[in-house]
Length: 233
Ligand SMILES: C[S@@+](CC[C@H](N)C(=O)[O-])C[C@H]1O[C@@H](n2cnc3c(N)ncnc32)[C@H](O)[C@@H]1O
View 1 (cartoon, protein in one colour):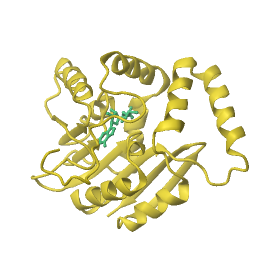
View 2 (cartoon, protein in one colour; view 1 turned 120 degrees about the horizontal axis):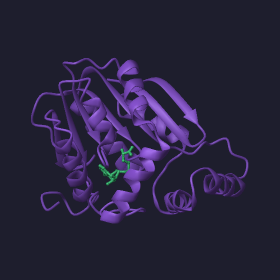
View 3 (cartoon, protein in one colour; view 1 turned 60 degrees about the vertical axis):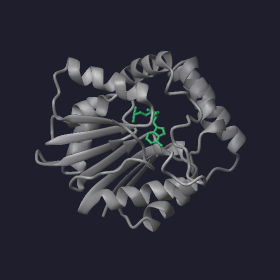
């Protein structure tokens, strides 16, 4: 971070759940494989973002690399980045063990990754942008816009809070109680940390940020506190 001005946000400093902790990383990987069907997520993305086998894809906040591994089957190359070096090392090991040769991993993030090559056809980020406060989300989105080809697609999926909630105390208490039953104590605890310490924003703010960064929002899907946006440059 030394080449950045003093006021620049240090995205390498973890907020909320610590994804530089090896035990946390292994636990995260296991939970996600149990709770999510990443194969279906990648098929959905291929169809809805119209991913072609010649495409160059950037995934930001790749975590343990599951999505990058799956997307790499459908395209020419995936560049997968994350601010946690331990996450990147974990994902790299997985890719090597699966003999994947078209994924390039890099220890960088929304605010620091520099693309010196051709612009990307598709940029994807899931469950990562909420690590930045709103102003820095805007900078991240503008940087993403700048790295995309004209007509390129951007998919953002993240925790975004609905604005039409009468009582947020009741709303969040119910989320935690339901999660304890459906996903277990550990996930419920991580969600408490998320609400308390991370920077998930409200639906209307996220839509405003995307539009102000220059994107055309082609579709929005809200499912509880999860939101998915397909955007076009
Ligand atoms: C909840 S995990 C999500 C991982 C993966 N995308 C998934 O869907 O399972 C959040 C990831 O975002 C990374 N992250 C946090 N801040 C970031 C930033 N500013 N730029 C890139 N990645 C970031 C964390 O290190 C962590 O690996």
